Image (cartoon, rainbow, N blue to C red):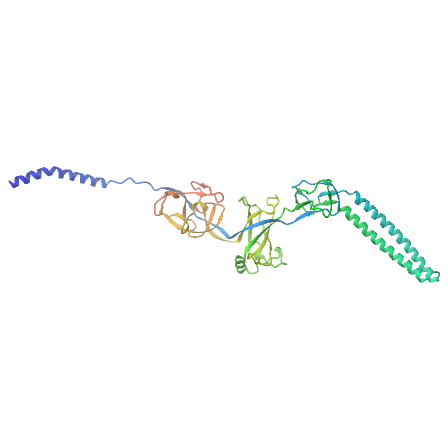
Length: 411
């Protein structure tokens, strides 16, 4: 009886066991088949380049005119002519204003007549003295009379000298009626119009400002100054030493350039021309001055500009696009693609910016590949499909695919 029951149970469960075995066999077959995988994300990479870079400093500077003068009237009279355009350029020696000359011409004629009269009186006094000399020898006149003639001759000489001085004054005053530009520059608004009475006590007629070249004055922190002098003994020129007299090794130590208020780079280089003799006690800075050519008059006096000083002694340093640099709490970092196309995070110490590029002080070396496009698609440790690209160092424009060798990237 028991045997019959067992056979009946085995017959009942046998089909179920066979079905389970089939399912397990199918599952095993499925695991052996390859899974469908996503391809690694595509990114654009830049090959790190080296460039010669010198020490670099930036200072806020103020532009100043080398020459600025108030045009004034030196004699009193009515303005009869104004010979310039307000706000325009005038040349050295150009006639700017003319004051009515008639009164001064008359005064000049009077001075000339006075001089002629004084000379005639001198001639007469000398003749009288000569006659008196003979008469006093013969005893015809007294010594007192002779002394009077001598005094008269001396007074006539003095009268001639005074007349000459008056004539020179009259000539000068007549010359002052014509007011000319002492140097080439731009002239501002005229304070007076033709017909106004002007004189030495009047306000300036106008202001003349030289434009080319132009000064840029800036301040250097005392700590930076001392560090520089310690590294370059003898670099500080004395008051009596000109730029041309400076030691050969100190000439052209820095290349000077300007960034204008609108962010553009000025296209003319400058030179150091002045260093003050003492540090400002309140600010702890030393005032220096550079001179820049300004042939087009782009730099107006009074502008705030950025003076850039770059050492001519340069060192090869890595250069990378600014677009590749990211920042977190630890500082700046980039994503490097290894030769195995694996992404890794690399902390970098950055230096100065040069247009669209960034100098790297440490953390990268020439030829390494860094991601410049596709940063949001990758993660450290993941695999990528890199495409080498070029980057315009001035504009930062990325071109793909790269048509240059790695060492030429970005140049």
